[in-house]
Length: 331
Ligand code: GDP
Ligand code: CA
Image 1 (cartoon, protein in one colour):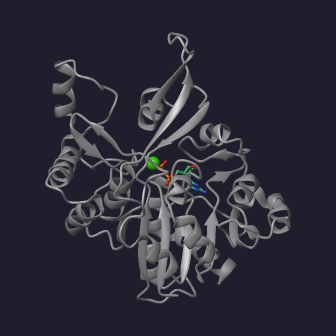
Image 2 (cartoon, rainbow, N blue to C red; image 1 turned 180 degrees about the horizontal axis):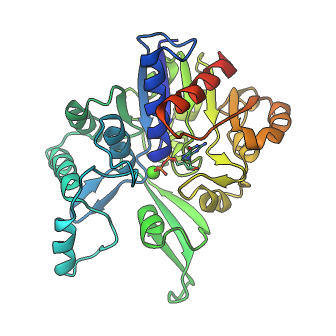
């Protein structure tokens, strides 16, 4: 297999990609060519405008992680970051104050915003930013169109009893501590796939759903017109890895947003939510963690190849072993 396409969110997707590239380089993933090329279709529904800047959290997390510019402890943003711009903005009392806008990171957003305002589509802007970071993958935004996930939460102070906040506000300001009652994917119905996105799926030798959030990362990518059909009909096998381990997310807020779409928080339920391609879904195989081995029979009954292996992405070599298990499952 030479052409690998991965549908990615931010942190979970980026860590998986780091392991996949490590395994390709080290030759530890049987079935993948030594010169295998990885194309990433990244979620852009977390994107937001803040202080006049266009911020693309998932694109940047993938770009910084693979370009060795990420802050490893936080898992997002730039290494050796400082926060003077943020402090100055707070001193002016301008909202929002909750968004983590680091000084180094601001440069990325300035370049992006300037190029967007000059008329370049996000896909070309992303390619330009990647010329600096050399992530070792082709990084494609799922769409050049504006898509934003919004979250409906209870709000006693509002006459309707509800408030609608941007996904980033839900995640960062509210810390996903209040239930997400429902999700609204603003613009998703009208979004067209970015250049190269459908071709990356139909022309792939392998399509991977990494352990990314099934609702607000992979779910939104699958919601872009034509993407789900491309995955259903590609001749490439499609394999996914569970982001839910032992009935909980590893980090992030998958538990909260799975509740909002009525899917149980379990490795089996998420695999069956994606569904087998033979039954109109998007997967051929689904890897679960060893702790969820008892989910395998139900997944197989649902038409999926399934196996339980260690799924904690502790370091690139361990993550490469996960990728190897994923390839073996459907290869
Ligand atoms: P985000 O956009 O930064 O939230 O990142 P993604 O959507 O790409 O990934 C988030 C998901 O990654 C969460 O649901 C986590 O449970 C999952 N995740 C993070 N680390 C691990 C890990 O080591 N193993 C597994 N299986 N899932 C993980
Ligand atoms: Ca994200």
